[in-house]
Image (cartoon, rainbow, N blue to C red):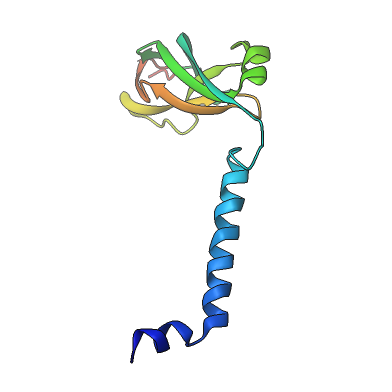
Length: 138
């Protein structure tokens, strides 16, 4: 088959595929805020020395220690939202609700932020959690 015949064969489907690809590309760019003339300027901000708290079951009376006790968190959002936010509602925590009966383990550090702000990086992204004391009596 010659190249000319290959290009002309099903030309309608090929044009449709190109159009569909372009529309998909535009939709993705608008979703991340980089669309045509969106005017939104995203910026990042780092919050250092954020205390890592523990989320555990209400009936769990064990004492835990988290190492390291603090994390550095990098956030992304539009400049106005980050300025209003100012880190007041920033919460870094480790989820201990399914901790079980182990003495120590590594747990992912999770971060809660308001809508419109994204978590880019958490350092460290995992923390070591150890049980100091248990409420069980023998």
